[in-house]
Length: 100
Image 1 (cartoon, rainbow, N blue to C red):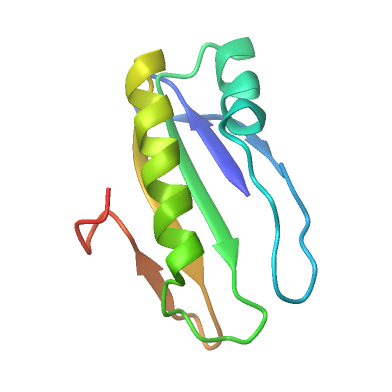
Image 2 (cartoon, rainbow, N blue to C red):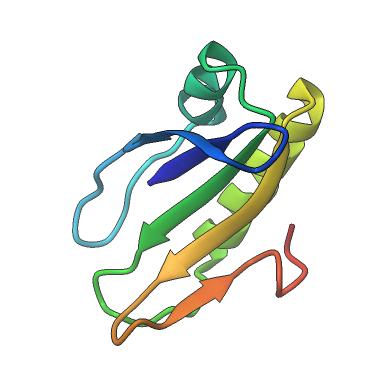
């Protein structure tokens, strides 16, 4: 899930960009930021689940978060967070962990 926000951090749109398989999904920055540009979003929050329920960020999660952060900076759109959702209402914020 991707949430697009205005300058007051009000959610103005929510999209599902990709649906992965049991073990992987492919997310390209252009797919994340095209809707952000079309709705004039000032910022984006990216969230996805880990089907295993384990919220430990994978190396691919870390790489994707950094790639999205770089793309956001170029487009002058803030990437507010990259969140991994697991079981029992557990989640990990890659912003809180200093990854982005």
